[in-house]
Image 1 (spheres, rainbow, N blue to C red):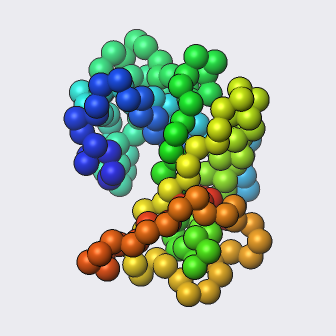
Image 2 (cartoon, rainbow, N blue to C red; image 1 turned 60 degrees about the vertical axis):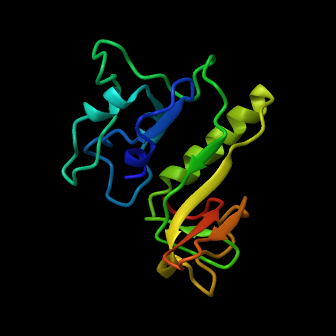
Image 3 (tube, one colour; image 1 turned 135 degrees about the vertical axis):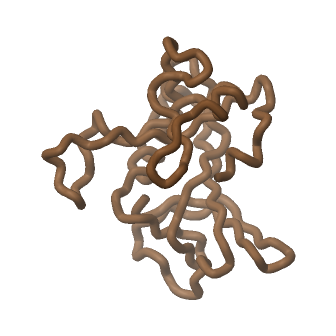
Length: 174
């Protein structure tokens, strides 16, 4: 996980992580969740907060609604009125094409969040965040990853050793 490389979390730099609440049992497997169960970005406060997070069934730290270092306090939502503007959003993807459009896992969590956050930033008069996706070279495709559904890339680069690529933008699916 990328966070492990950021620890210790630099003081004064707010870091928000995605949380996707479990959908209600009536939601079908491939349907978008109701808005109350859609993805949000909640603040991770410190290295201690991170180290105390419970792990999900895949061993991935799960931030949850409440802080791990101060359990009685809820996490700040990045769309709270006094929250700082997000500068960068790291977006996952299954693959990326030569125009840096991304193909996600098909539920649209990141796409819906990015759309909501861009509208929120515009309403506040803030610039939209830079969208960056980290990818392996094997995830970069020479043909379109998605047809007309992805936002244009914000930037791209490739590691010198050829082991990894970097693409910006958001698109169909996550």
